[in-house]
Amino acid sequence: MNMSKIVRSAANLLFPFILVFGFYIVLHGHLTPGGGFQGGAVIATGFVLMFVAYSYDFITGCIGAESLHTTETIGLLLFIVTALVALGFGVTFFTNWMLDVGPVLNNPVAYGPNPGDLNTAGFIPVMNLAVGIEVLGALSVIVLYMLSGTKEEI
Amino acid sequence: MKNLVIGATVLILSLGILYAGVGLEFGAPPFTDMDDYFVSHGQEQTGGNNIVTDIVFDFRGFDTLGEATVLFTAVLGAGLAFRKRREDEDYEYE
Image 1: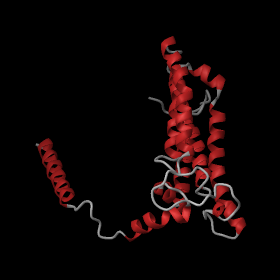
Image 2: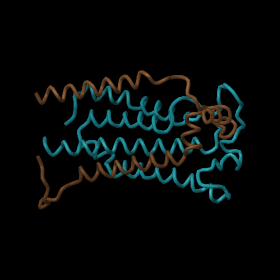
Image 3: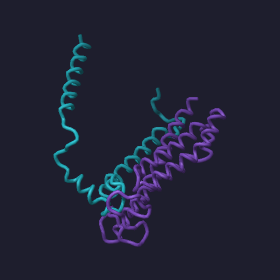
Image 4: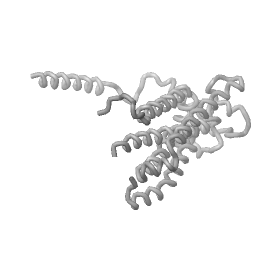
């Protein structure tokens, strides 16, 4: 059952800002405090806010547990595949292979405290994104499952 | 009487743990070789400014892989617990 119009309006207003803040934490994971797991948890908080504000039927009509579960699986697969690609370059599993290949994410980093550059750190930003996608899918789908459990009672 | 014995045991145990915890030194670990290595080489070896992320995703990638797998398994377990039950399915429900 929907919550009141005030709650729904506030949730609609806050949702995009929570998404932007979460993706900021994920994408700047190699520069600032935070990372994939924390940013994914923040994004999942935004989804949970929408789950709470709207009815279960409305939410499952919009996203559904299957798509969230697929999101989580895609994140885990991206993580493992990024680590596996290192084998193709003749180095071991989980080696930071992007540091040896091409200009992407490969600017030299200054030693010591510095303002930071997004285009650094090899595959660490990719891993952050993968873990962020996975955590966002996993935490929201768990809440959605629990919501479906309460639906039978009411 | 039984409650008194249990309470005394809990009290003595917690006091002992507290005493052991207070007695530990904090802030000056005896072995810092690993920490010093990460702090002084992490930036140049991984290119990331955030040493914590460097350790989590590069130096200890396998640890993060296990963590991601644990999260995946947790979601599978939650999906199993909250699955749609058939009408004739036999389960205990309180």
